[in-house]
Image 1 (cartoon, one colour):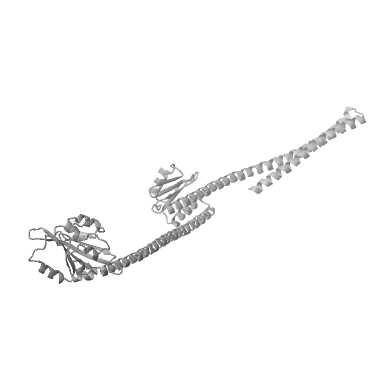
Image 2 (image 1 turned 45 degrees about the vertical axis):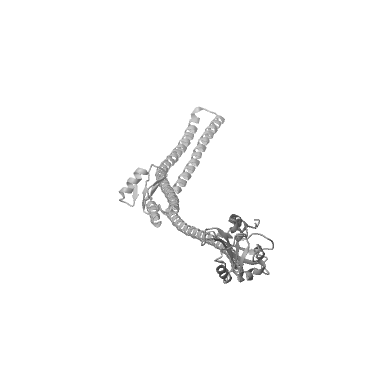
Length: 433
């Protein structure tokens, strides 16, 4: 803004200068007044102290800028007198010039003035228009306050706040890092606890499985000592009780009545009748039925809430039922062998009797044949006398007859070897029986 020299004929009212001068000079606040022509009319002692400019050097001049700037430029009071407050608002840093909340038309601002003092000075100043009786603009009054100490304190406080914020930020980052480490440690701990739990569950399951397997092995061994079908069924039923299970067993042997254990279980018997042809393994509700040709095994209280144990139980009872069925099949085979052996033994007795009779008859036949041959030889010798044969002819004929009789006797001796073989066969068959 260009400072314009206005009409000097306009002066303060004649009745007020002394009072205004007394008020300004007596104020401990640095104060100066300019008229409508931007000339300094008042410059009090406090203003001299703040600006370092004596009143005698500036009163009546427009050089009030000397108290603040090294070169001419308008100040807040100039903008108010000139009616250019918008430029004043723009000339200060954002937020450092604002309308007064007390006096209409007054404004306040603050700023740093490096030319004041050794290291510069912060000033807080207010400016308000001075109006005549009729509302005409007479000039402006401006007050100054040195707020350097407050600003330095604010700056120090801000610096302390910044340092504290940095410390807080660093501490926050440290705490976040520690928190992340704690979260990671917690995650690892939870993972270790989960692993430990899984290991414990696995160990417990393994121990349970080993115990169940021990029961299974014991029962499988007991099957070998069973000599009756009912004993196999009772051993299988006992295995269920060792597993803490309830159920029933049905044994079906060829040629024997179907036996259901425990006896008197009508519901179990009906269950077997309805589900025996449904497949190898039948699951319904809390029951599991395992079917084999000679045996069916029913569990009526399967642990539905523990699928892992239920799976082990199904596997074990399937093995149990298969082993029991194999033992029953073996017992059936043994019974068939005993029946066949009894039949063979009975047949051997008849064969021995028959062979003994055959041997006796052959011995009698052989003895009779020998007597008949000797008698024939004697008869031929007697007949030769009446035939009129020469001696050489008789000798030749007898020789022929003797040779034929010897052949017959040799054949009879071969039958004796046959009898010996038959006797050996009878003896070996007797050993098997």
